[in-house]
Length: 131
Image (cartoon, rainbow, N blue to C red; front, side, top):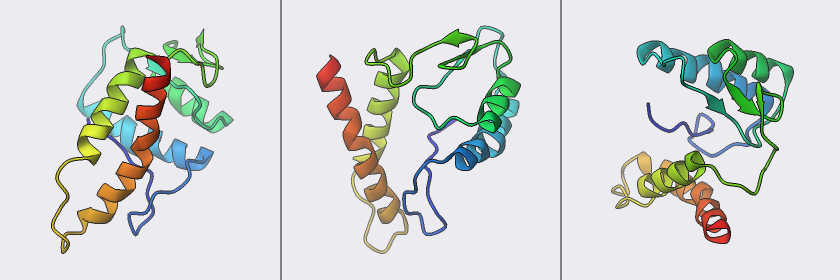
């Protein structure tokens, strides 16, 4: 399972909203989990994701009784200054993908790569200030 970028049809970064988050959960994460079944020990942790009843319902449907978040089965403060191991892994992984050698100018991947670079710059700042 790879990263998911919130982009419009022209591959430009867009703001994560409740409906877009639900779309990710139902149309990307759900099918990926069906292909790669998780064990009962798997938990879902969300920190600072847009909250709406629909998104929590979708998360609970995918991970019943295994949700770590402000409104989850295991409470976790929103935007906690304590970065989890997931935060460090994800930021490092995204940076490694975003800062690969740029695609040739005629490739459609250039815009996506530049968009990903701008989105991951904050990851480095967060890990430096807490690490």
